[in-house]
Length: 303
Image 1: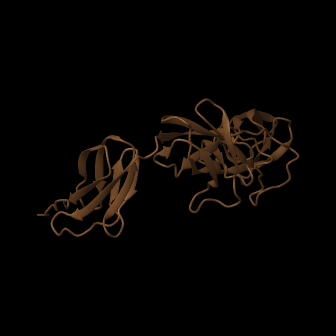
Image 2: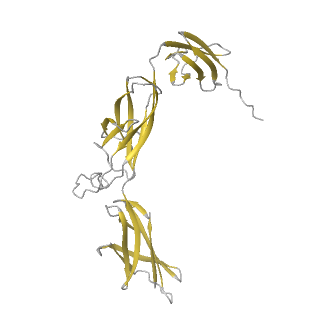
Image 3: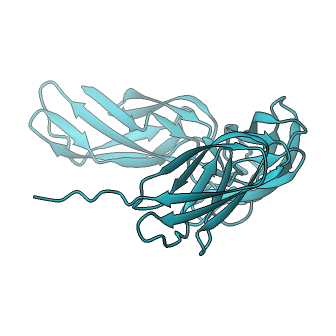
């Protein structure tokens, strides 16, 4: 008799569900429908049984059996027992993956000024992460801030989020900072289970980390006022987007936007839906006004 039991997934999150499916063949062929495979864990404890439900004339096939994976990470060897014959079932359990994202980062921050950004963290098995702590680390690896995740998930996502206040470095430049959420080992004493029966206080989690850039600029010296209009009608364009990297702005209902910038040479880009992007090199040495006339995108005629 030959018995094979497949596990899906082979690498499973601690405490998550995994599916077992078996096939049994004999020589000569036998119909074993109604018989059961007994599943035992690595300690020999009964986990459950799988009924043999189908026979194609040569091979018997079981129903699917859903089991909970162990809560400790590592390699496991369970067994399927039938008529005194034991077949190994191998799989591995991993710590839950912790994913981190950062958004609402200002395009540029003035030297030494405070700014705010948002951090979102989620678990691969969607464990509740309320009150989970994380740290913000600067380009030298020094912890400069800390935060705690709120109780609710960010709308439309499985992210638990928090807003943090940070302070820009004292020198111009592009800095790479990071957010780190420390990992956790299995805690068998954890009792605060989620509605799904799992708790982030019980299950092991790997460390989560994400990097983000902070562009630090000198104090703005001048104001560049951009007036944006339709090239043909000369009507103001509201909501047009200005970029003089790393500075950004959006036009108001008058089609006007102001960018406070440091002295220097820039390339101004103005974009709006259905219009061709406007580009103009600018050398800023004083306050100035620029008029941007946007041309509608050509309409392709269909045959």
